[in-house]
Image (cartoon, rainbow over all chains, first blue to last red; front, side, top):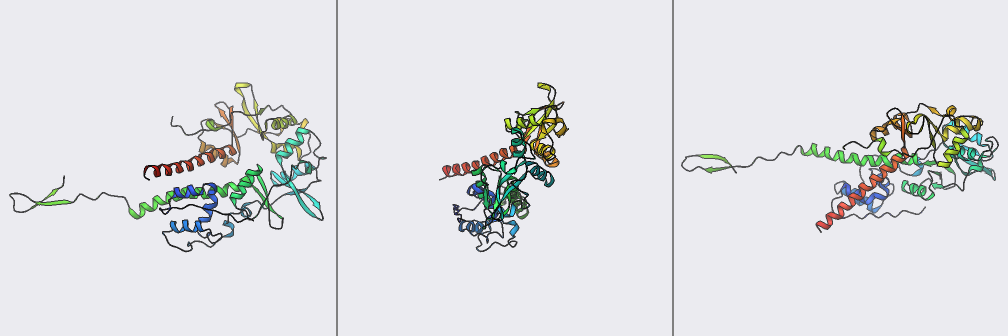
Length: 248
Length: 153
């Protein structure tokens, strides 16, 4: 897989949340993940290190935090659906419908046996079944499910990150991608419904940062009270002592 | 004028509807023709269409195709989800989302008093809307920064 080149222009000013947002718009959730404590060591980028150093009061070195948790790594493999229902392409549509009902899924993987192993032909959804079969007529118990598969399946590598997954879905105009490992074995299916929580959670976290920032400021600095005006003592004419006199 | 965004503001007012007596085969063709995944089942005429059910492509697959039944011999009324959840057109956007969450629904018909259909809200449409708003927020931050530099170079 081609290494990703990520360049973030960081000026010497204090890194604010807004600077962060500007730099990271194209892949907000992805970058937000990379800056989370503990995950910097996984895929170090010079720019990311600099940003994180600024966020942590200019201390160089690794950010203290929880040990990297493989489940938190935001690649496609960690969020895709691994329980995949599959069916041989020669089986009738009715069988596909039955599997969808039994397993409460809206899509199944269609396979064919070639050279002794099952190869993926593509994905068939409940929508495909309902529309194509019934619109064209035909007996659900006779039509092989392979007939409903349109074109080669759109796949994505298990190690791909979320931004790449989004781009792949955009390019294919597909809600689902078949996730495969380096050896070309199916690992799972990634749908928009899998991606969305992964992209939104960091965003919600970002909003939480703003809330916590205010809280921290209130705690550390307290409520700002204007100092009392200094009291000037001036000798009063004609009297023996000092008199306190507030300034105008 | 300070009303929050409501279901009526964001719903799609072009809704593909059908009656309970339509056969399921015809209903499937209707879905294909209009490129939709569900039909709102109504009774009553034009301005007084009351919502009585929802039929999705999924319903057709799990109830008809899986059972090996003939779609031409079944009526929409036999297969639809009757008495579906509906929302009033003045329901605030966040409450609408919470309703979808609470009931595990992706689509909700929006109605006027009396249960008369005015539109349909889909979860996917709310995503598009929110993404557009977020994108605009980000662009606003960008233009604020540019303005800052212009004023104090």
